[in-house]
Length: 133
Image (cartoon, rainbow, N blue to C red; front, side, top):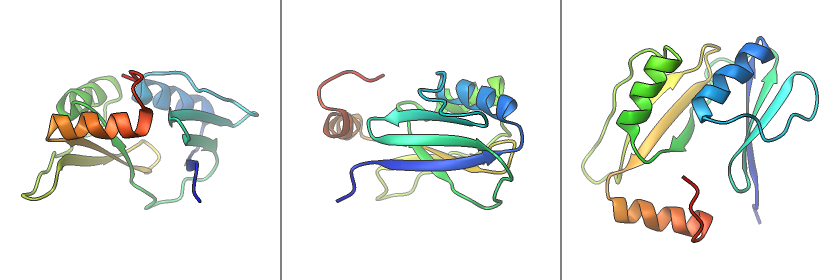
């Protein structure tokens, strides 16, 4: 039985990497267990670890569900100078998505449910009735 997930990315400088991910995630780390390492709980039981070290090229992408992909795209391009990335959709696929890389080459993707009632259903299934956003 799987009950928790962690995903790790590596950055060459933890100070710069931690700040970049704080802006990306709109929050400070939930846990800093030791120097060179920071963790964010994205949703209950799902953690992103940022570790100082040698980035592994071609990893990811880590895909993150958002409520408004265009808003997040514009925010990331403005605040983090993320290169322009295209938003895709395809008939029969319930989400729109786009991918980019962080400054260390780690792949990151965003997706947004097209059907907002399906999105609300997924949020409720994952988080229960508490409001997370």
